[in-house]
Length: 255
Image (cartoon, rainbow, N blue to C red; front, side):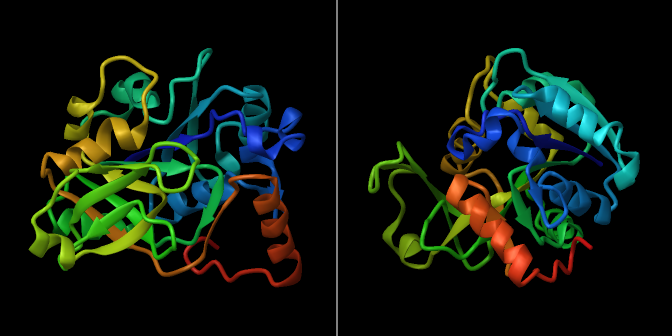
């Protein structure tokens, strides 16, 4: 099994730090932020990963090398022009091949039992499984069988503006759903690659997984109840650093 780690973003909301350091390489707990998702992959037995890079790409490549330090085989997919969160799949399709694969964000720390998530995905015959957490924000609604029956995506950063996939559900189904937030890891079958838009840039959620849910395809949610923090902006990064300095979390599934 192989993985795609998304690391090409500009990190604009973490400026001025990201003017000179790419967000995945910002230090947290004595190591670069991207080490945490890479350790998650390695602990689950995934040894091969491809990382898409754009902003300050050389710093990421120099910092990680070929991955020997983390017990991985890392290769890179440079993006001269940003391809969006989903477009990297077009570029790395041949690398991922015909096997189940993982997609992971590089801008957060997720103490996820990825091995359990992969087993969950296979047991349910899913095309895709998204890692979810409880949160005031809602991205996905799952039923009693953990199947995602609706995805709710924000149109913009303005509160209250969103699109639902599908826009309408049977009332009896809608009443039974529980809301969760996506937290940065996906397990997917290679057949998903036949559903991707042909031309980047495109969004991973609005361009692929939300339409899959709207079409009734088997997309499931794996609920994570452990540690999760993401670096959305400078304040979030400073808070995360403070957490590690004052009360380091026990990352049971990473270290």
